[in-house]
Length: 344
Image (cartoon, rainbow, N blue to C red):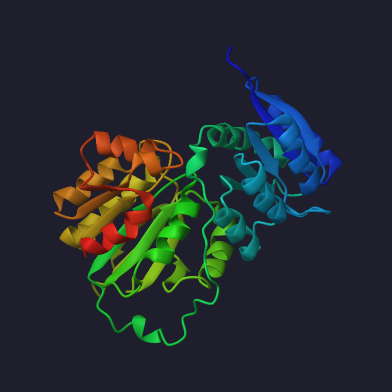
């Protein structure tokens, strides 16, 4: 058996550090090397114990989770999985993902609730995935809150909607996606739609906060919503998202139950409606979803763009699509916006 995965658990509630530690150590591949009751203590123990992954609560005394993330990423960088009940606070979820945490997992409801054990496998899986990321590619997104939408109302409803920018990602995608949308021209004759790995519970709050920082209008993709130019729609890959036509012939969203390959399903539907005006984009993530959907986009003469493997935090999604020859343009993360604009 290989070396065990070392995890540090940071949470101010003693019963929760014990519950999370017991949960993690029930997996034979994981060893909890220590616990801490606040961010400052956590930072000290990271330097001392050098864990492979840190689980981090947000609401803590002395130094809260967000302050801790800022310090950890500068002083002792390590993959961080946030385990918090504060998933409905848009400023917190957005800020944590912007700062570069690998994942934000909703803490099981209630204090010592039985559903912490129901959530066991999901949390264990996230810890293991976090340990395998290409950590040097994780960076905080620098954004300027002064960037307002004042005077930009004419972006919405007056420009034609000709293209769809269909974006897919999974784990570690939100950070890359935030950076992409801060760079992408909101005046393009297009709607952007992102399917990403994020809890549906976090989605609305995340979109609301993100909307304050970019020129694109950020909205959750909902059943029946008609796509508009200058709007970026977000949906969790824990649902099935497709693009269809309503009774007026307008492109709109259709939501369904979770499917095995949500990116393939999404990309295919976008290609059916927008045909050669479909721009598919694959960002960092794990798994092999997306490449078959890219093939469908290419069959309709649309364009496919993938983030380069070297610039990905988790390279599987793009690597598989590239190796299957389903990608027209491979570009590093910093040039994704430029590549998208070049084909529209």
